[in-house]
Amino acid sequence: MKRNLRFYFALLFARATALAVKLVGRKGTSMPGSWAIILCPDFLARMPKPKHVVFITGTNGKTSTANMVEDVLTDAGVDFICNRLGTNVATGLASTLLAESRFWGKPKHEYAVFEVDERSAPHTFRYVPPELLLVTNIFRDSQKRNAHADFILGLLDEWIPKGTKLVLNGDDPLSSRLAPENERVYFGIESLQGDRTKVENIVNDLAACPVCGGALVHDVVRYHHIGRVHCDACGYRSPDRDFLATAVDTTRMTLTVREADGEHVYPLANKDTINIYNSVSTVALLRTFGLSPEQIAESLAHHGIAETRYHEEKAGEKTVIRYLAKGQNPVACSRVFENVRDAAGKKAVILFLDDYFDAKHTVENISWYYDTDFEFLNDESIVQVVTAGARHADVYVRALLAGIPAEKLRHMRDEAEAPAAVTEEADTVYVLYDIYTIPLAEATVRRLHGRFDGEKGGADGAH
Image 1 (cartoon, helix red, strand yellow):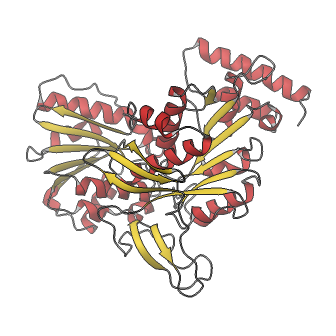
Image 2 (tube, one colour):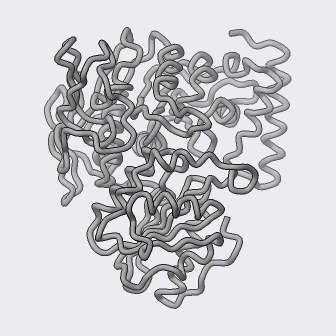
Image 3 (cartoon, rainbow, N blue to C red):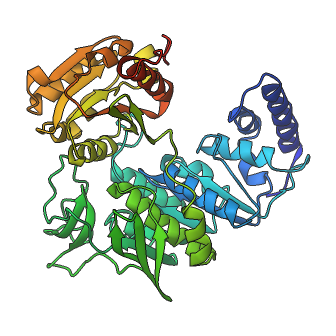
């Protein structure tokens, strides 16, 4: 699409906005892109793009996967731009393109890697068509935004360009069926400890065959609908996988992936099931992109999961773990709850589940609590659950309904009081928090240090 006077006015205004933002010391803001799109609604279509564009999307895992992909590409010397410090919607893409272009918009780089929110497909895919698209998985998500998985699948099906090559999760019967006419490769995992044949989670977004509506047989269940399925009535079955993790060694932290040219071993960043899938998807995308197994393996050995999503440290004799439990997302929280249950030792759990913005300004829809498997926290190894925040009483009620004994529960309005409530009986203290409450989690860990090893606790005003 040709540039016009409106585009150039928006471009110049956005550049002035970016300069103002820089002068006041703010980073990672999407404000320049927001103004560009306000002033020129088709700004993304008119803005010149790098020659090769890669998108990474999905309900869960897209940020961790995008970070790993970008780390490996950086180590490999690939000249690319990304929105790692900005938002993953149209305004964030616009801001990144602005920041990484010459004055009149010509791209400085040949490649772009963008994490893209799946809900924003109508506003991004048609304006910035990707050459490669990785979809990690599709689930129901926030009640306010995209609670219905079929709605998100419909958006993606409608807006994925015909020429885009797809890298899809062959163990996700939902996202694996996206854009059936497009060229694709599949990734997956052959077997994991704990594989079962029955969906035990509250949420199951695929209870019937997606082709004929008949009875769906779950050959392997990893979590929720992720696994391997088939239908006896119409013959539908999960697809074969081009990148198959044939061995997952959580002791040596390695991943063996069978590819077209044989098997290759890669470092494994984290042993949680979602993060194993993130590692396999990273390998699949980078190999499809054209990197060698040696380039990928050497780089992954030096990188891991971002500390803002998972971090372990010692506070006196206790292990303290910060663990992101994505707010208003029942699947993400259920995965974290199950991982905490399965971890060794006696554990105490601090829950900060309130949405940061809803807690401050509006009433939060708490129905997602009842799609979340709080029942995983009802385990002998979990000696205490502490919940704090504006809706602490609602979480307390949900925990009681999950069967957690009242004597194991503590709840309070003030988040700063949570560390003092933690029992001495626990060997490990988990602090579970939302994307927007990272500072709260960090302040809580400081207070735990202040209690257990004498370090000065964090200041008030943790948000």
